[in-house]
Length: 308
Ligand SMILES: [Zn+2]
Image 1 (cartoon, rainbow, N blue to C red):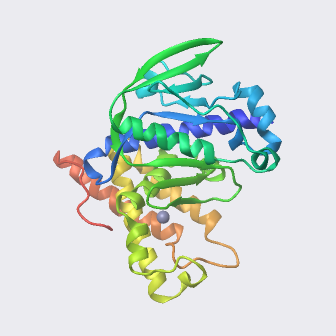
Image 2 (cartoon, rainbow, N blue to C red; image 1 turned 90 degrees about the vertical axis):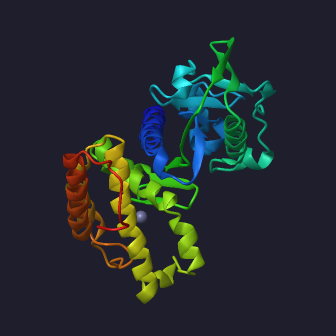
């Protein structure tokens, strides 16, 4: 269990690091921007009951929320914030010491409510500029100033699951641990995260809702399926631009989508709302050719259309 928790933490920080790099490198392309501190927080309650005691032991999580990890060279790292520090105050206001309700204590599932409120509070403070942070490390109190950078708004969460799944609801990007494991390196993982970030940057969820496109069982029929497919094509295309501009090796994309398709496309229900792995690989080739051409000319790597 301890090794599993450490692996989960490593994956969480890895995902946050790639998202940070994508979100900061593409600031000029995003309409929705937010302060980003490059820090991943956690508390004991967010772990399932089965893992909670172990999480306390492994991460030293007591009554306070703690630092799961920091993005290397990011704002929190530069402020001297370290993994396993306890976060005890933001701008002089104490973070809420852990006081789980009976309901949370008895729940087998993790409870994210308190952490969600803390993240909102930190985000609100960071939006005003540098924030004074008080930490507890090996029993010593440490005060530091956290100066965030601006980035594309791109909160991201890692969901423990055996399913290959990613999603973007307009604010939050979610990807499963299975999808992280499926990616063979950071370049492939960047292509997945950039795809979801593109959905949010292009405000796809809001536009599908406006068009009353059903994402449920009925989504596989007719015009619904086509509209969702269009957003998928756009997210793949723009996502590759985001990844290229952040310095990731986008040449891995065609093979990645073919491999993904071999795992994902088969089964009793093929999903007509999503292009097949082969189609996505072909489209990626076309997008990569466009980006190469811009680079050869020394032109800025700016997307000119939604789809190749
Ligand atoms: Zn998508």
